[in-house]
Length: 188
Image (cartoon, rainbow, N blue to C red; front, side):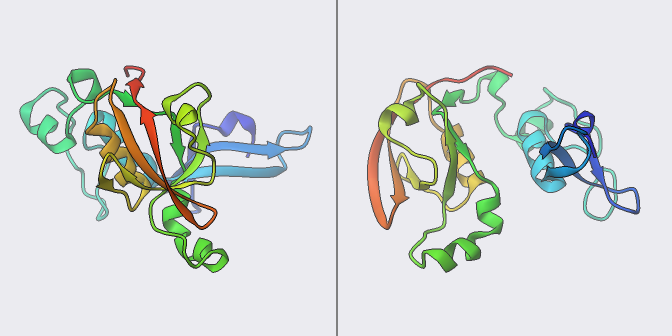
């Protein structure tokens, strides 16, 4: 693998796409090193949030074309930000691997709750100003229980820019309640 592969497909020995190459660390050669990929199901779910159903289903059957803008496609894909859905932004970058590795995290801290683990906080965002920190686990957002990264994204999608909302996080064995202001996110 090399840096030129980032953004491209990760394929297995049978030629099946199993992920999207997302980054890496290597020595001067640019080939040997440690590289990362987003699992294809996570990439597909993210793409569907923006454009509706894509690709093939688990049995290899075609899901059909995406008729963006048709009532059927909009109903299946949910509200689109570019067509009037929520555009709320809080500045939290969630770690989708927490969902898959939850049991490992519990080995280090048995009280660790399910939720959306904060991978990063954008500087000057509402979450930054409200005190959210990397490593926090979001368990509630505006009263909605959060049990996964996708649950966090769904709850955020139901909110509007300009709102000040309460967020509950788990940090260092304690649950904290913080207020964050949502701002306008970038349009697609």
